[in-house]
Amino acid sequence: MNLEPAADPDRLYLATGFEVNPCRPLFTGDVFTWVEIPGVGMSAAIVIGHPCSFRGRKGRLAERTPVAAVARHERVPAERWSTGFFDRMPLPGLPFEEEFHAARLGQLGLAVTDDLISAERVACLSHAGINQLQQRLVFHQTRLDVPTAEFHMAFDHTYEEADLLEEWNTELKGTAEDTPAGFESWIRQGDPSRQSLLRTPQERAHVRRAMRKEISQIQKRGSLDD
Amino acid sequence: MTAPMPRYQPTATTALTPPRILERTQLSDVDILASEAGALRSGLGLLSEDVAQVHGDSLQLQLESRANAAAKRSPLDLLNELADKGFSWTSVARVVGVSIPAVRKWRNGSPLSGENRRNLAQLVAFVNVLKEDCLIQDGASWLDMPLAESSFTGIDVLAAGQAQELMQFAAEHIRSRDLLDSAIPAWRDTLDDRFEVYEAPDGELAIRVRTKDKVG
Figure 1 (cartoon, rainbow over the protein chains, first blue to last red):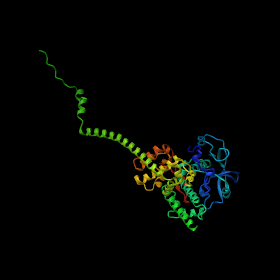
Figure 2: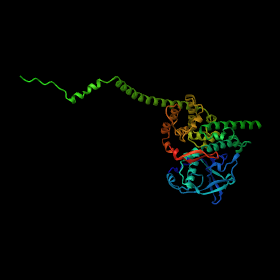
Figure 3: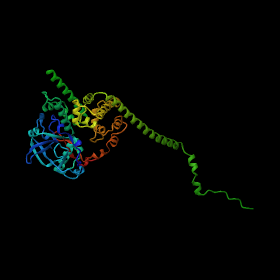
Figure 4: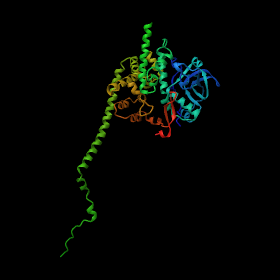
């Protein structure tokens, strides 16, 4: 078995509570406080879909987003998650009253994306956390045991793109370019496109430099307009 | 008359077994050369270990000296330099040993602890040594490069606190596998050739089980 044990909150989350950046785009592994999950009811929820399943062209979000219910869970030793509880994803340390929660991977539904956006986002999983979520989800649904390193290699470029979009939104907040569409247009430019360059790890620094240069130019143009 | 003493006649055994002392004195030039080369090689091996140790120590001192100089600059200046070089904030946070929101706060002017400031300065110093001594112009890209066909990168090695080992790899004194063996001993556990990542017909990357003829 390759299923990973429960991770420490430091490794599991990118941010929790007030540290969650409101400029971060909706992404796999985001945890929301209270939303309607069709077929399940009102519940805390975690986004489980691959970004392709809810992000379309020009940064437009799909009308609905795949989520799983998140509920309080008894605390069990980390290593027991490797050999059991296959229908759950451990979420220790969420900023709720009870310390230990788990995503219920059998209680899934398509939440209305606007409901998610207007709910409070209380945590974002880290790259390692998303890999673990994908691993448990695939095993629960198919009994296929895929090492997290494979998810990392296949999806790392999407994590990188989400990080870049977060930076774009944060730096350009309040400007005319503060839109996912502006970023989408920029990241798809070039031949090969910047987006496809992100698939090659050693090309990412180049894309980051280019984006920061672009942000700086937009900010300069904005200050001249003022 | 007494009969004369019979002359010594060597038996087959004594005739065929020369005394050991003869074997020693009859070393050929080739034997001597091989023996001397072996001794030299042993000596060189020991010397090489000593030199590697001294080199490692000197790299550590060099990094510390550069980090001391970098630590005099403002944290925002250090962060801007890393941003200009193309580092992700995720990588900076991992190497310094803090959360990403913590780095975001520093960029907005929040103060750093002495230890974090030191760690940040060490990262800047490391990248500058890469450029000046190892001729690696794009340190951020080099550190993002996967090592030994694994998912581990130089950033993972730095996050494990093994800057000196990584410098030895940058200077081509050790191989990537040796670097990972030393810095991240469990790295081989993550290698798994049952799966492969490929581009699906929709243009997105996906994972599939390797077919038998491709499994190594």
